Image (cartoon, rainbow, N blue to C red; front, side, top):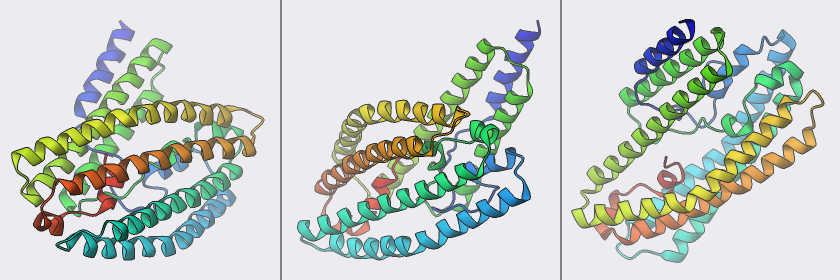
Length: 302
């Protein structure tokens, strides 16, 4: 009976979660309240640890500002290129490649900060600290809409509440698996929701024809198929990161190497997104290109 009640409680809690996402907010999060830093509050950090981690995050923010400024400048240049009647393919490629480099540079800055934070933690804290894969999940939300951002933040809080309650309950292995699957399905719904918002944004902003919408959907479907292999490898890599963090004999060098492998996979996905962006531009008219978002939209596409 107790098992049935617990499962029913979990089901009812899941029902409270509406669609949303984990990407609301700014690129750099330097607060214990947001994104993966929410977990820092669950580690019972000492004052000394908090001070060290705060310094690490401030350093990350300072180092990132120059790269973010460069991304902003490149974005403006790219907008000029795609707004012209005749597309300068070579000029566009130089800018887009530069944007990819900047994004990867930011990823490695976050990697360095992450490893420094992990070094500050003790064995027990490392075992519940998120992997680097999750650490990166706080990404810029591309729509400057306060209502949407507020909705996303509330949705994230509901997910966190579910995780908190799941931890408080004395679940057996079977119930834990049920909880994991339910949370997994909710995140899947979130990604699907974000993808639909982004697609509707493009359709509405550019006034795409039915034929263009069909071609765009085909491009997105093809990209998703190509990305599956990367996602499977990322999943395996994330498991390796978790194993390293869970060991009492923490191996910083091994974790760094494993994260590098993960970042190589992320770079591969960026290349797929670059190709998607180029193919997408081909289906637009010159007038539509003037109103089109730049490659950054596609690099952070859900």
